[in-house]
Image (cartoon, rainbow, N blue to C red; front, side, top):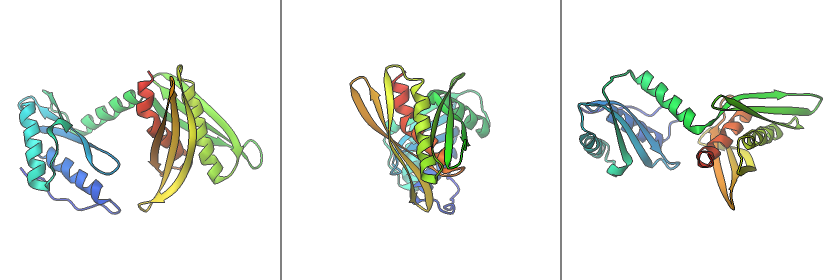
Length: 233
């Protein structure tokens, strides 16, 4: 069964379009309930996760995915990058996606909860970032000059301060945060040093500006530190 061809969405990059076509193709295969592709920043496939019915053997599912991607899209994917899970329960796609989001949130441990920006006095601003760690709540507050670039820096620093409350034998240091224009979008780039034991690692994260540059700064710091943070637990 072949996937129905799709057209690029407005502003969608060729790499994103190819990955979307690949997901649509895999989802159209017999016995496949859902699929999710994980790619690196260059758009290269790192992992393919496929949920199938218990009527389809995992090895056969892997071969089907490999063959379909090569035949339909000319994509050659190493079979070791394809992960197959079986279920006897056929659930709607919405339910599967909600479960995946919930699992991802629990694995990230620290998740964004709230951002509050207040002006205690003229030309000064307080930025408070609230993060959640399971049922626990941690927050960081920074004060500085009430100026656009300064507020982005304060939001990133407050995020780091909140993270530090949950770290015992490690620490994080903000290297810098910047708003850049790329691919017709505004993107916040955050660089953080993760310090654990005697080693220090530069961690970089990004987030597209949607709600506000300050919120994007918080999410960029979390994007940079998520995997590193899990290793410190």
